[in-house]
Amino acid sequence: MSRTRKDWRRLHPSSRPGQGGRFRSSLLFRYLVIIVVAMMLLPIVLPATALIYSVFLNWGADIKPKNAYYPSATHTENSWHREAVALKGATPEKISAHLRKIQQDMFPNSQIFWVDPAGKTRLELPTQPNMPKQWNAAQAIEFMKQASYEGPFTVVAFIGGGKNDVNQGYMVLKVPRSFFEQPPTDSSMLMYYLFFIVLILGTFIFVSLLFFGGIRRRLLQLQAAMSQRGEDGLPILVTTGRPDEIGKLEEAFNQMVEQLAESRGRERQEEELRKRLVADLSHDIRTPLTVVRSHLYTLDGENLSSRGKQSITLMENKLKDLGSLIDNLLTYNLLASGKYTMNNTPRDILRLVRECVASWYPVWEKEGFEVDIDLPEHSMVWNVDEQGFRRLLDNLFQNVVRHAASGRFIGVQVQKDNGTEALVITDKGPGMEQQSSEKGAGIGLAITELLAREMNLEREIFSSSAGTRIRFLNKT
Image 1 (cartoon, rainbow, N blue to C red):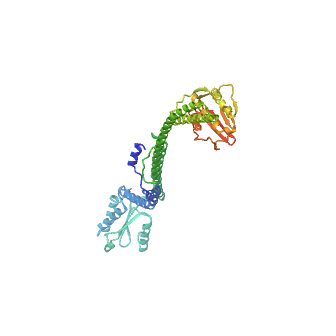
Image 2: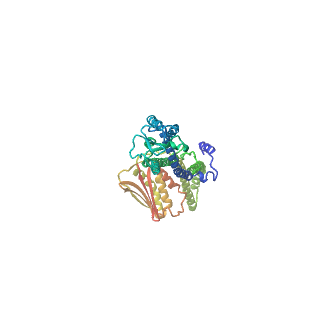
Image 3: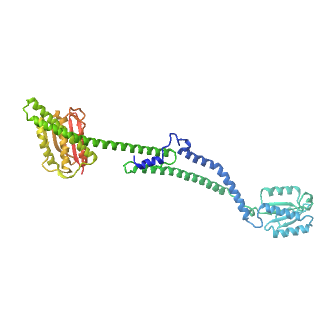
């Protein structure tokens, strides 16, 4: 594991099992809190805002009255009662004169009249229609009743103030109610409630967008981390956030990356060990092979029986096979590690195929193969490495001799596939799925695959009990 991953693991240790797994740490709990708070705001905020609305309305009316002489109904009523007390013991003439004066100075645009103890109307400012000249009890009661529910704002005060002074009569002040207040209409209250409902809903939507926006941002960060690669070719680690579902996903992702890094390190060590082992074994085996071959050559010169010469020939063939296997192992090792030098240049592959077929023809003839070579006269130029292409063909021809000898057939043709010419090698062996007495580890076939990939050739294999067909297409 790289130093960066070790440092991250030390600074961001994995959570203990069960830590942060409580319901209160989950995204569901947080969103339920948002919904509950929004539901609680409606029954709480609406009455509170209505109260605030009325307070501010009255406060605004008190500060800026529509008529400067009448700041409020309470102030006007108290002023009228004070004037009535001030007239205690005054004569009718003084009462009338005083009422005329305060109408001009204190209560303009009002209606004033007073009634003496005998029920006679003594003064009307201004003259009012339907005003009784003589009041009885029924008329007084009807007037008070009507003044309480409709008409202008009316204040009645006993002259002199108090029940003991009713013998001086009473005086009445009538002021338009529009001087004091302008009550809100139903439509304005409706608009007011709608405004606050929309405000609460808008706040809920905004908070919800913030909530889901945070989730989306964290998921996009995790997606970006998955798509990015570090120096070792693995996804980069992410910084874990809250211990919720996404936080658990981030921790699981980091653990997966750590496990991949550890697995990649083990694979790299095993690959290096395998490559060194193959190289060392190949070098060590070549020396005794050379010695054995020299002694076989010496024995071949001796006077041996026909059976002894057959044994020497068999051993020489097996030594050749063993030498070929060692070469294949070294080639595979170089190809797998990317150290096999390839020089892809335009080559006439049909010429290379004819030369390889010519070198293998005696072997096929000795084994009793039926050889079917069908190559066109024109050239077919591919971008290949000449030595690598020859090795690819040699491995394929050798596999046919070893594993498909029972079919006694090999064919090499050029076929057209959607207007593109392809090289096809066929046999009539038992197929790749069948067991062969010469079946090995498949190094030769693996080498052909790696060589084809390095030369940008597409390889397709079709195998059945009736035989195997291998086709090569040039992808460039």
